[in-house]
Amino acid sequence: MKKETNTLIQDLQHQKPAACQKLLTDYGPAVFRMVQRIVTQREDAEEVYQDVFVKALRGIGSYDPKQASLSTWISRIAYNESLNFLRSRKPNIIYMDDRELGSDSLEALDDAPQDEHTIALLEQALSLLPPHEQAIISMFYYEEKSLADIAYITGSIPSTVGSQLSRIRKKLYRIIKTL
Amino acid sequence: MNDIKNDINLRQAVSRREQQLPPMPEGLNEKVMNSLTPRPLRKERGLKFWPLAVAACLVGFVVIFLAPPKSTEEQPPLALEEPRVESQEPRVEGQEPTQHSPKDGKDEGSLSKAPKRKRVVRQDPQEEPLLAEAEQIQEEVEEEYLPARPDLYLLAVAETQDIRSRGEQLCQEVNQIIINAKK
Image (tube, rainbow over all chains, first blue to last red):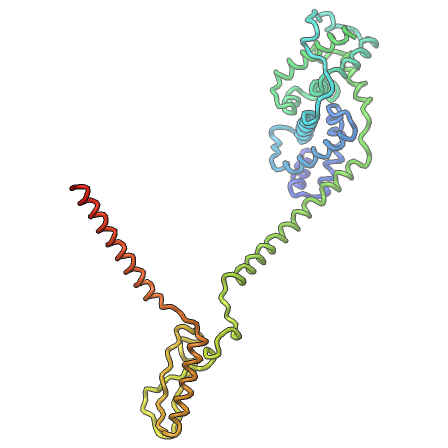
C-alpha cells in the first residue's frame, strides 16, 4: 500500500494523467465530503473541490510523507481551501457563540445512555456550529481521525485539538438545552 | 478524553448527519480532469511562441535602426568604379598602366578611406585635352555626389582649442574677481 502510494506520488510529480485520475478516484470522495461539511452550497463545493486538486497537483512537490499521509495532506488543503472560500464570501449565517450559552454543569452527560431524542437534538445542534467546528467533530467522530491528524489538517497541535473537541462537545449540549 | 470518545449520542448524531450529505456528483472528476489537462498545454505553447516573437523583434530592430545601409544601389556611382592608382614602376611605351583591382587592396568598398586618385600621366599630346576634360568632369561629379564628410580629427582639435580658450578666459575672470575682492 505504501509502495503504491509512493509510486502515485512520483507519477503525480511527473504530471502523469493516469496518476491524476487515480488521485481523484481514490481521494475524491473524502475530499468532497470534507468540502461539503464547510461549504454547503453544491455549486460552491464543486468549485472548491476543483481548486483543492489544482492546488494539490501544483504543490505535490512540497509534500513530505514523514509529516502526514497523502490523504491527510489533501484533507488539509481541502479544509483550508473551504475556509478560505467562506472567508471570501460575505458571511450571512450567524453561529452559536460560547458566550451566548450559559456555563451549566455537564457532568451528567458523560455517562448518558443512547437516547433517540438527544441524538435528534444533537443533530440539530451540529448545524448551528461554525463550519470549522463541524469539520473537527466530523473528523473525530465519523472519520475517526487521530488528534495528530486533525491537528495537522487544522494547523494546530494535538493537545489543542483535544481541548477544542471537549469545548465543542460541551457547547453542543448547551445548545440542545436551548432548543 | 475517554468521555469524548465514548459519547454514543454525539457519535450517532454525527453519523446521521454525515449520511445526509449528498454523494459526490458522478461527472465531477471528469470535469476536474478536463480543467487540469489543458493548463500545461497552454503553458508549453506560450513558452515556444514568446522567445520566437522576442527574437524576431530584436532582429527587426537591429536591421532597421542599427545596421547601416549597404545597398549598392544607394552608393554614389563613383564608388562603384575601381580606383586607378599610378604605378610606381617606370612606364614602358605602349604598355597599359597596371591597375590594382579592389580585390587586391585592403580598402575595398570603403568610401571614405579610399585613396585619392592619382592622375595618370599621359604622354600622348593628342589625348591631353580629352583627359583634362574627363578629369574635370570627374572632379565635378566627385564634389556633387560624394557627401562632405567632416574630418573628425580637425573637429576634435578645434573643439579642444575652444574649450581651452574658454577655460583660460574663465580663469582670468575668476582671478579678476579675486583681485577685486581683495581690494
